[in-house]
Length: 140
Image (cartoon, rainbow, N blue to C red; front, side, top):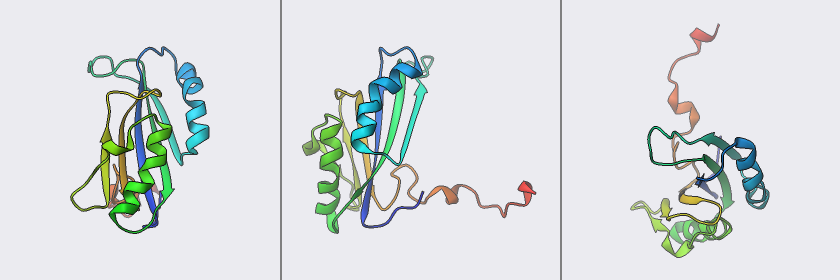
């Protein structure tokens, strides 16, 4: 996905430990999806073998319009953090001032992490195209 410097992209990570089916997770998170209007949403079963999380995990990718500067990044995170039930005052800005992290025990939607980055997905700051350097010869 392509984003602009006029946007802050927030990636929220969620966990509903007591949910047993993907359908139940979707039902539980559908009001959240309606309120945030994400550009991406994923639901997967937690890997119980790893022991870190149970139930279902969700990821929301939300693009928020933002002013320039560090204050623009911080301001852009406030609304998604509040919708997720997280305290925006706990947002920690990265050293470069272009993104940051908000960690929590768990919000009412199961939110435990909110990552933010100006103009890019916080987990893929170079974009999806950076993952593949070939010319596509293998696709013929």
